Image (cartoon, rainbow, N blue to C red; front, side, top):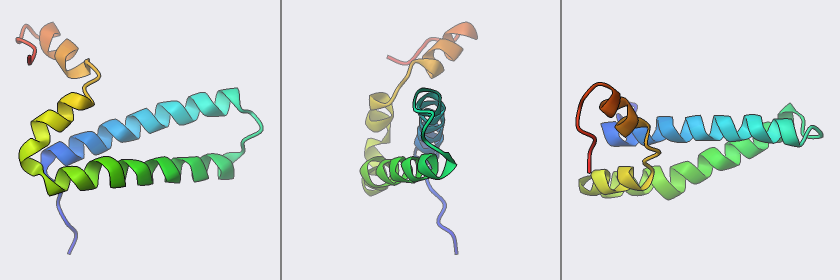
Length: 90
């Protein structure tokens, strides 16, 4: 049976995926000698780091989800909320 992660973990996983994707694209553009296999190795290593250093620890302390999410806040949620007239989180 597959484990279902709490919403905070899923949000951070998606944010991590987006950051890794942008950085891999940037790396591919700057280091043209890296091929698809090389980039796949880098991607796997970065995904492993996100899993071990962020997501696994968040699963261990779900009551601290709000604080952990604030550490990784890139301002996108606040900007979107402000654009809808909502008050951004403090």
